[in-house]
Every structure is written in structure tokens, then in C-alpha cells.
Image (cartoon, rainbow, N blue to C red; front, top):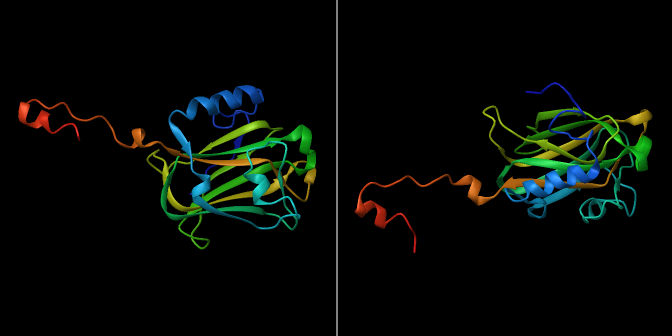
Length: 196
């Protein structure tokens, strides 16, 4: 079920903060999360030559993907197996991209193109830096999915094509998946609490 659009001032999209603060928050979260975008197959609805997936994933905020077609502009991220995804992060810069900057983004998840469900709809002010978008199921846990689709529905100043500078996909680390071991009360059980 679709959620109402969030504005860029919300906690999940810290565009009101400086780009440096956003980067620091991402760095803190790296201790608990790992980037898994390299485990997926990426495809785009369209792109200008030389402004495609390679630029979107090259770890440089100086390069970007530029769409070349009608809206919505789509980024499709497909995993080979069902994967737990905590969040996606998009780097956007209104000052550099102006009318190419998306102002409404839909994030959808599913098993394939035919059963995608919108999990987040965001309305961005004038973003400058990383926008973190948590992906959670109805119980607030990270989603398990085969596919993520990020759709730029509209741009600032009614722009036609979109620039996205970077997209990262984060999963919980293994330490977050396995919770604390129970405290064993007998010596016999305690002997087996550590795997050698």
C-alpha cells in the first residue's frame, strides 16, 4: 500500500541538513549496514550515451545518470535471490542539476516487474546531498525482495529528463540478523554455546 508523500524535511530524507552531515550519518550507519548494489543487475528506462548505469554506480558525485525519454524515469535493481534490504540512498544536488533534479520519487519493491508495490513516495524540496529512504514491511522490518524500482515521477521546474548522481542499496549486516544468544543455565548447554 502506498504511503503519503514525505517532504524533504522528514527524518528519513535529511535534505535540510548539510551534505557533510548527511555523509556523516551514512558513515555512522555503515557500521550496521553494508552496501549490496554490486550483487544486483541494474537497468534503466533510458539514458543518454555516456550517462548510464556506470556513472550512477561509480562512487563519484561528479558524474550522473541522465534519462532520455518520457517520464516516469526508472532505475531497476534486480537481485538473483530474495534479499533483505534496509534502505536505499540517492545523491541529488539541486544547485548543480536544477530542472533535472527529481522532485517526486516513488520506490517500489516486488518479485518482478508485474507485482511491484510502492513502499515510499517522496516529495523533495531542493536536495543537496544524500537522501536515505528506509524500506520496511508492515511490521517495520527491512523488506525482503527480488527487485527494487526507483521512479522519478516529476522534476523541479517541470524538467523533462532526470539526473541522479549516485544510488546505494543497503542491507543489515549479519550481526543485526542474529540476535543475542540465550543465557544457558546448565554447564552441559553452556558447553555448546560457542561454535569451534
